[in-house]
Image 1 (tube, rainbow, N blue to C red):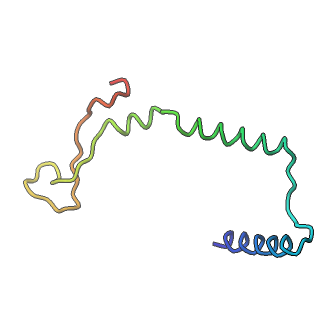
Image 2 (tube, rainbow, N blue to C red):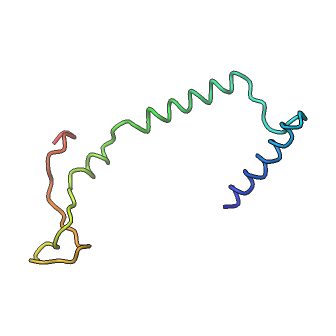
Image 3 (cartoon, one colour):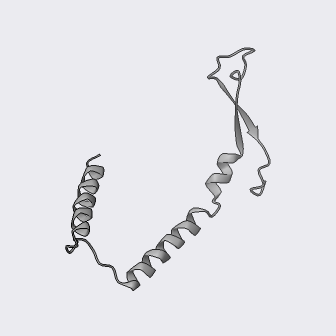
Length: 91
C-alpha cells in the first residue's frame, strides 16, 4: 500500500509542476530506451502465452462439483476428482 501512496504523491507533484510549466522530475528516456522497453514487453507477451507442459498436466485431471468419492450425497462444497482425460496435449 505504501507504493500506491508514494506513486500518487510523485504523480501529484509531477502534475502540479507540469501544469505550471516548470521542469518536471523523473527519467527522460531516449528513443532507444522506448524501443528496448517495447521489445521486452513483446517478448514477455509471447513467452507468457506459450503453452507449457505443466498447464497440460493440470488440465488432464478434471474437477467437478459433487459428492466426494464413495458418498451418495455430499455438501455443496465437496468436489469429485475425475481420472485422466484427453486434453489435446499429446494424450
